[in-house]
Length: 112
Length: 113
Image: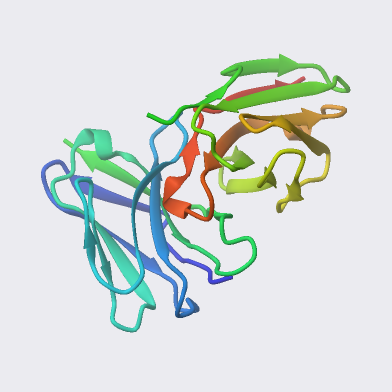
């Protein structure tokens, strides 16, 4: 399975863009990149996913490099409610592809 | 909205007790999962089930068993609770091989004393 590497923590000023990096240098061609977040005392919540192209939804944007070895999750205007642990996950292909492996994630603190 | 409901938010049990953690989902999802979450270790998969009466071991199944007699319900069983099983337990469900469709419950914080 492809592994991911994320910084353990980041700070972001309220109202500014939060850019969360993820390295997945061993990703294979048919593996997707998924982002989830976990707000304190809640279960993880899906944010966005992508394969090759950049993706955007109402929550965030996902930028994947051309070689697919890294990606960045962008929260365009961070609010205090975005304070959470953010998980970058590469979904394995083939058998067990419905299984997600969560790492330690990045703890994002949005500061007033 | 899809709901995944875990029966208890907080539980305190004694060492050696048999403990049942219940999880129910209301969207007819095929796949259900049990994770535990500990500080500094992230989420670790204990067991999952892709159909009624089917189960597969995750990364840390030792000391646990599961039961899935009905599609909507997935139970995690600690046969003889130990203090190292004190943790936050999270249940999740998803339909098919759709990783973005994971829906998690709010978790059960279990303390074994």
